[in-house]
Image (cartoon, rainbow, N blue to C red; front, top):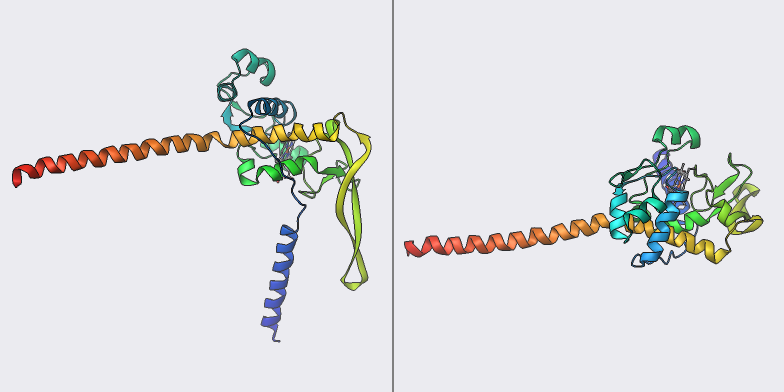
Length: 249
Ligand code: HEC
């Protein structure tokens, strides 16, 4: 094999290794959300405001829109979802700036308006439930779905701190690596039993799915009008054409 061929083979190998690392990720759980369930979306909105909005914005969503879509009165909206000083037509912006996010966590918390569309509800559901104890990490936790993540385990008071289960596998050259195979309850329990924690996360993810949806719903509604307009315009043009040619013939 000449040098070039060897280089190409090495590159191909590296590429497959990287592809495998990306696809052989942590298995995602089924989020099993129901965006048609208003009560679930209302609980999810409250969860989001209490546990996520401190760091993450929903820049395309206004409080007023939530009240309208989730059947909340202005009083309910103010009492449950808004902090003092906010106006109902304000977008749901976090008080944390991207700058602060980067300097405090090493990475800015992304806007979550479209996260369930870019990553999928199952991903967000599994991510939120897969934090585990890791003394090697600066904040003492790691995540099975997004290893080395800058996000903290903000739901630890509810879920507790899970313990990782590793399997030792032998790799080339007589070395061994620790491979994460499972998560189990640790010594520090949370306030919610497992099923209640799962429904807490399910409601939160359902709310994020709703947040990612209204834009599509609005676009689709607009699409219908565009098509109706085109149909009417075609009919109009056709009648005009008939009218003009009537006299010519
Ligand atoms: C203390 C600040 C903080 C809070 C509170 C917080 N997050 Fe995060 N989150 C982050 C940071 C920082 C990142 C960026 C992580 C990274 O890039 O590794 C992040 C990333 C994410 C991601 C993207 C993961 C990916 O694959 O890129 C999702 C989804 C997410 N957070 C959901 C949530 C939800 C839902 C809540 C509320 C239950 C929440 N976060 C609360 C700081 C926070």
